[in-house]
Length: 76
Image 1 (cartoon, rainbow, N blue to C red):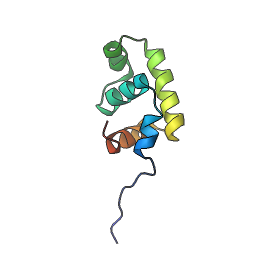
Image 2 (tube, rainbow, N blue to C red):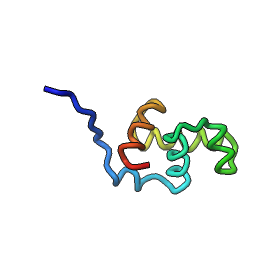
Image 3 (tube, helix red, strand yellow):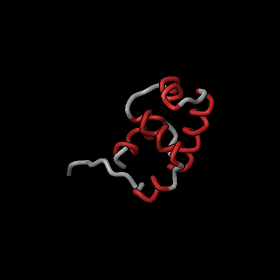
């Protein structure tokens, strides 16, 4: 039996994210730092941190790595 990586999160979960949260998630999934993401979005790094905390809560994950894995699975 081969283990597979599955995610309980669906595209519906992605639609729960606000457009700016989705944009921040795309940047982080692309490997950008909080500061790089903030500069690209014209925000402070504290605002980006707030967006990412909300995203983690909505996706029910605890780490940036989990959030990135889900973002990639959802097509971000």
